[in-house]
Amino acid sequence: MFKNGIFDRKEIMKKYILSLAVLFFLASCQEHKSRKQEQSSENHIQTELSKDIKNNTIFLGLRFGMGGEEVHNYFKDLVSQEKLQLIPHEYISDKGKIYIYKFDFGEDALSLQNVLATFKTYYLSDKLYKLRISVESDNDSTLPPLKSKLKEVYVSKYGQKYVTRENIYNNSQGYVWMDGNTMIEINEGLNKNILIIYTDLVALKDNEEKPREKLMREL
Image 1 (tube, rainbow, N blue to C red):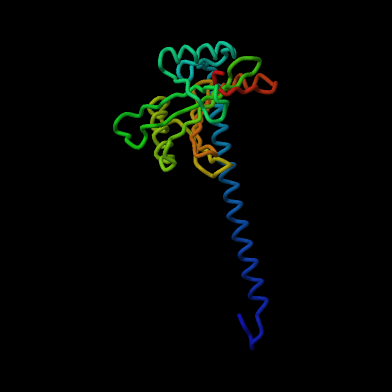
Image 2 (cartoon, rainbow, N blue to C red; image 1 turned 90 degrees about the vertical axis):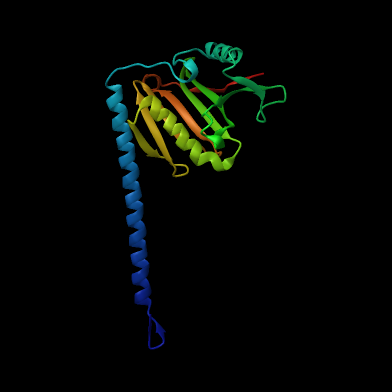
């Protein structure tokens, strides 16, 4: 790098240009990978939608197309059946309570014994078209095994025909299933949680109004 005690600027420039070329190549590869994943996911969705199969029943018997009041009454019924719990929650007032679902993965998953989920519902023209389930554990270190377990559960129900998709927020790997008009996603959230999202793609495609969302709680 030195010639006769003088710093070789040409050598530095060569290394600088080489470094830029490597960074550009890596960025191009990542962009190509993201486009390829997105295209694969889109092709998968279009293939399933072309079958014109409608499956409106989703988590806990909820159905796409239910009205807001109907959904709320249904959640109350699930509480009376002891399938859901109503408990105070830190994000709302002291008098408010939020609907909680407790996952039971069996005794073979000892590290996943206190996994709870909350719900957010989304409506178009007062019809349920999307359900977001936020799944959390009281132990932050259980996030990878929780994600793996949920994937295992959904593979057992919907099969191996899923596509992987990279989460643009944290570069984690997510999973997408198609069941007729229903898209099911499992992704890592931004708050050390796992998100399970059910979306009626036909309703989303046919409606241009702004979705209305609602955290499922009882005040």
